[in-house]
Structures are given as structure tokens and as C-alpha cells.
Image 1 (cartoon, rainbow, N blue to C red):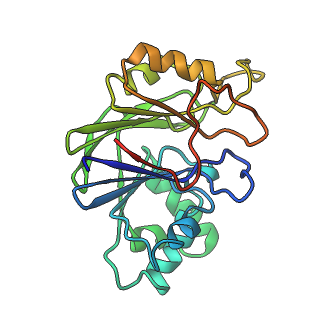
Image 2: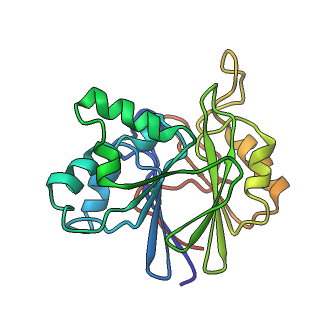
Length: 243
């Protein structure tokens, strides 16, 4: 196995029935990196392991459906069943350490994230290495929020993950010749959403995929209530994909 992707959770901002929000586990050569950690992800992981061994967590942006379960992970690392295990790396967007400190202050523990995880900030278009994976973060269009997609390479394979994004040339470059492009497709139809775009329709995701030369497109972050044409592959919680 060169690389394996496990879809831990793929719900959009409101959860699909029985579903967890964004969380995608990538494994290669015995190392495991989790891309985003939304609500419900930690519980899904614990269905398979008493405590999930994850070496690194990388967060695309600070909407709760993409990072909310980092908070209960802190309690487990600090006081609970994960306290005996090594602290995972936690990679956050530029300025993210200040965001974590402010949230910690509101919760009564300003250093809670720094004490529980090995926290680092990544930079836009600055490739970083985490537990044997190379990750290139590219800024994407998500309303007015600082948000990124990830290009993750390891063991000779590359997965591109859009995070949350409206139409952007960055998506094509993010997925350029990747083995797998995991792309959000939240919208039923393309529309201006009343202003700056934040999400894609399925045909917009496919247009970015077609332009990129990537080998396979998987759609994610799609509401249960919105049908999808049979030509598309849509992921589901628990799905495992060999890359």
C-alpha cells in the first residue's frame, strides 16, 4: 500500500444523518496525518481504536466543521485516555496560534492547545514536512476567511484536498497531476451566494479536476439533501481508498 485515505467524516456545515464533519485520515509507511478535524470526527475514530493514534493534524481553516473536535482532543491529551501517548503535531493557518490562544482564554485555559499539541503555523505556498509527509498549502476562496487547500505527498503518491473553496485557479494548481483530488461540492447549482463565493457546485469541481490532469476526482462536503448526478463519485463516512 503506497497511501491510504480514510474518510472519517464528510458532512458540510450541518451534519448529514449519523455523519461527522470534515476529517480525512491519510496513512503511508506507518505514519498517519489527519486533514481537518470537525465535529464528530474524534468519536468516529474511537469506533475503531480505544484511542486513535494520529501523528499529525493539519487544519485548513477555522470554521468549526473543520476543526471543532480539536477541542475535546485537548481534554483527552491533558486529562484523559490520550495523556500517555505522544502529543500529535497540530498545524494551523498563519496567525492560528493567536486564534488558539484567544479561544483558550475564553475557555479558561489560554495555553491549552500549546500544552496538549506540538503546534506550528504553516505559510501560504510554503511546503512543510510533517511526520514524513510533504504538505503544500495553497490559499483558496472561502468568503473573506483565510482558508487553504492541501497538497499532500508521501511514499510516491499525492492527494490534493480542496478544503472549502469557491471557484479559484488555485484549485487547478493544487490538484495538478495528483493521484487523487478530494474536492468539496456543497452547492446544488453555481450561484454568487450573494457576494464572495465560498463553495463549489459539482460541475465546478469537475472543471478544476479536468484542468488539473489529476487521475481521480472524489466529491465531498455535500449535504444529504442535495442529489448528485451518477457520473460523480461521492465519498461517505468510513470509506477507505487506496491511492
